[in-house]
Length: 288
Image (tube, rainbow, N blue to C red; front, side, top):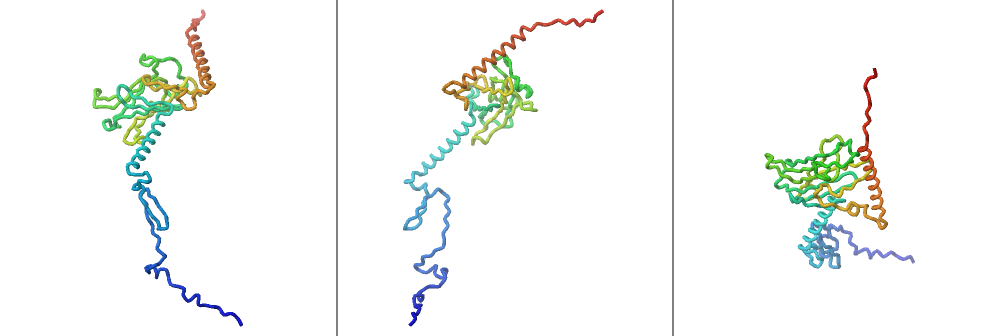
């Protein structure tokens, strides 16, 4: 006798739609719920379900409102420190004794950039003027030799004046003024140095950024400036310039000193040769 199939186990099955039973008591199926987290939050999944807590209300997380504000201030301080680092790379920061303006300066192999912080609440950007004297032409950028003193100021290679124009000469305000410590040249095809007003580097602050192109005695030579203006404090161009720190065997220092001695000696011999040169008299009279 064959075994019969028992269909009774399907008698209690529910073939209805989930939508028909959403509101029924004890329904285990629910629609997905989307929660938007506008603030930093803590999400906990446990046997009791999902729990969402805003982090700034949880003292146990160490993120109280005062702590959050402190973290924000610390982030701002780090950003400011990074900006200053870029503004003073291979350079320094100086407070002008006459105007009390803060001046950052940085440099690389070919140029030096002055960043002068000024009071933009009392000085309009359109009134600022930048004037230089003693600069070399672009064609002479590789012939910065000699010991020329500008305005008879010992060691000066030019003069810089940054000022805010007034209605007359008496109302003109000096922002920064001084004598250049190293020779510089103009950009190609230009009759003045490049400068701009920077309002993006630091919030609530404006700076006058002036770019000086370095003039050198010969092509391929790099001159690191110890200061841009003579009244600025000097840096150590070996230890304070990236990649030029003295090694334990003093190779960098010895090579620099060796080159400098050779250059100074060649310059001395050249000047002596010019000084001792005798004039030769040439008779150009017509023969009879």
